[in-house]
Image (tube, rainbow, N blue to C red; front, side):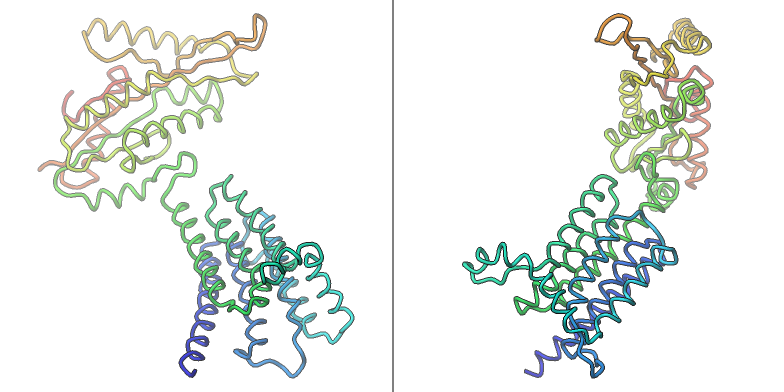
Length: 417
């Protein structure tokens, strides 16, 4: 019996410690929703702990209904707002709500709390018989409010791929479960502990993405590339990839189209190279080839370059031009002519080139614009002369410059030209 009571106390205080840690870490990472959700659950834990005797309570009677209904409603509010920080109007509003709910929990207004309890047990009138046949108590409003908050947070998490909202969804389910768990005579400490860990994980993953992943393309960024290069062995190569005529894309079609181009290139990079692809900055990308030579890296980059050149980005916006700028069309013809004279085996540059395609709805309808995208690639490997990652990256950048100077839409190894 003594060991059982000790375990329950350890579990209860462990749940509180995890919730405090979730609040502190989320606030430090500027994840206000996760921090405020942890604060709400910690407030609920304190109310339940006073009711169970884990925490000393004043002589007045604590009305647990304030906790059972208040926590799901607070988390429903957090599920509907945008991301914030703790020290904000939203944080002040939630703190005010918790203070009012705490004061209300100690009010001796019996008639008010009888009304609140009837409201909490309202669903039992409609679904009580179905649960009674199974020997289970019918859930109250708090559970349905928690499920609603969890559904809203889950939908928003799915749409925005925001991990904090996933943790908030679990926290809302736990808040809704508290009242029903008491009816089942089960402990609330395990669910609270799990919710605290979920909030910590969501805030940590969101901070990791902000620090290491590029927001536009979803690829790892420059910081992750530097860390990856520092852990490689003695034999590896790196490729620097640049989108041809990218400035002309932005000038001619707008920055939203430029973003589409970058996302399309990033998608192809992820498909060809998986976790070895990185966004270096601007329109430049990098690919690491652990244990590979320049020749092996070049073969794979040639396949990638050809796949990019074979794709066409269709622009259907009504404000898009139907014809490419004359300078870009001329640049494309010059590239083909120069490569043909030099006898090169690479494809002609199509970067910035566009073709007007009539919409299938018939003549006189809006025209679609097909934009061709090409990339230039420079490759370098680690060698006795280039030992440090910075030197290898610079070698790849020199090769990339040679590829662009030589006509673009081609792969060049360091020292080849």
